[in-house]
Length: 125
Image (tube, rainbow, N blue to C red):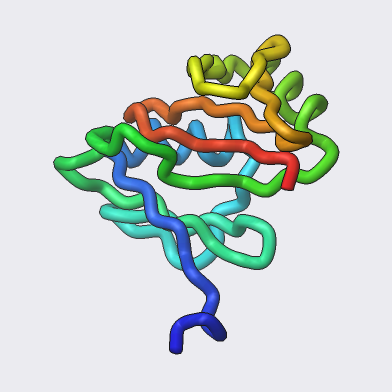
């Protein structure tokens, strides 16, 4: 049924202007489509990311968006850190942490939060 349709990630934020600066200036996403008072849409690879105003922003305690970044995860983490992104460190069974990257069984991942506390993950794919 839905397997042939592309999913779109959506992230709730309280302050849309602050979110726009973070997603465009820090993460380097290009805003696409019409700009509105309640939402902004960004190009994310072949898909899109919708950032919208909500009173429930930041209440999700799990990863909201995962970015499959391939082998470039180390450089991307360095670049984002240089732009002021702070990475999260989680104590998970079977994972070791090297700097800001978690590794287990060949999978490398890193997590950070947006200004509203939404968790984003980077994975080497």
